[in-house]
Amino acid sequence: MRRKLLHDLLAPGRFLTSHGLATEARTSPYYDPDGYWRGPIWAPVVALFVDALDRCGVAQQTTALAAPLTSTDEISLS
Image (cartoon, rainbow, N blue to C red; front, side, top):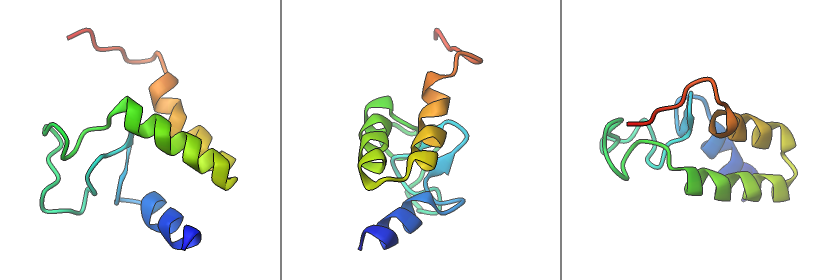
């Protein structure tokens, strides 16, 4: 079960974006990149997944998911 969940979560084009995990699958008809809960990433949700993936022992994915949230390359103040 864990392997299937991880595979689906981390599959290219599903939830992964250049900024982290989307809260709605990018392949979903409900996905809205400018939506509230149906598209953009939310730091608390990503933090929960980073912790969960770390507990699952997939450190490489954990680092990849946390990197966009901890990067200071682009900061929006609006």
